[in-house]
Length: 532
Image (cartoon, rainbow, N blue to C red):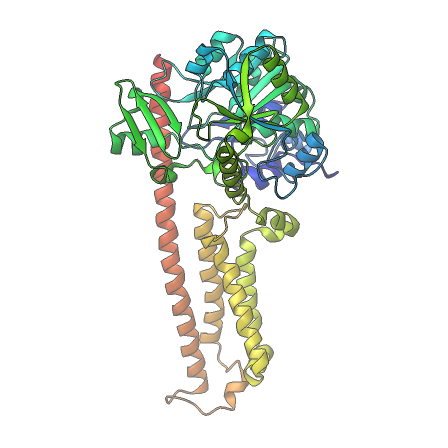
């Protein structure tokens, strides 16, 4: 880590509000002052600052030197290379798209009960039960379905024995920040914990160990990662499964993904939903996540390939290999070479390569640019270039010298790209323009260009000497011609900005309405859970 004191302020600017935050909650459980909360209502899934003194974007304890939140974040700064070098002693090679590993095998539990209740052979359940019963861990951070399971809402919880593991078995495809179960586990006396989570979560123990977050890092003794391309927002149940497929959440028994969303119901129905239809419900925190294969886990596991009752298992660390070898020797699991299903490995690498493209390269560039990466710099560049070329000496020179005229228009193109990039975002930016910010940005453009137009239209003299030597056109005097030109410029800019303003205002209202619907649904489900 750099020597500067990187605290909540930096995390809030660079990760939480930039689109990079996955909602893993690593920062929340690492905070020693309990000033970070977690919002999982309405599809948010992000940490937030509880103190009022410095507002949501800064922290009193951070100002005093506390840096644990940034050190616990697996998306802050150079997280991936730091973890690779600490965990494996080297950086990954370009061909290691699914991360560094020691072994790749197919595995499944030997216990038929764990096979039945678990996913794709029950390996993860077997790992947890064995670790609990053989003094490897004291508890595991997992997820359960809340209440009687009818809401299909996953909640973080602690597994302390075989029965707990069986109750937690199965896959969830809406998000749950399993690390949030950490305080309950510690309050229950556990000191050695396993964490089960997707790639975003399985990087938490690794980054904590790398950046030395103290007791929290030391307590995360076993890290089991789940292969994951995305999770869905909770609204998928009402807005897709119920609305189109008559699958209200209370009838859903099991969900899986095998090239499509597979749904089994309590009334013995089986429905397949094309993943393209689910795309719109992808959780925001997944859109920039580059980690399909849980690349920093001790053991990564996923149900891909041609064998539905075997788990593709990637053993990455000495801890993971030792546990697997013990379980094989004690006949707790069965394994076979990963090469028995080369298609599974090929598919893993294909999906991992595709997902790695999500990580924005601009993140490195923006960090190097520092304050210049602020979206409002685009507005300043646009206005600056326009005003620059309207300085009389430069304006007249551009008209007299063709090469300079070409340069002028080239810089106008650059200015246009700089202006529209933060609004259109052909590549998502970490520092984004929120709803009102986008409107303020456009308003600033309108005012900025309007001031120039007003000056040119109302100044009593001809500003540009070049035109004084030209014959008047269309019966207009030189001054009238300048006024008409200024009015045309202002009109054109007003029309363009006004259209953009309407579009972004509509988008802001649409997003606000969607967020409110999610919050309302969340409140309804929470009320139902409280009644249970």
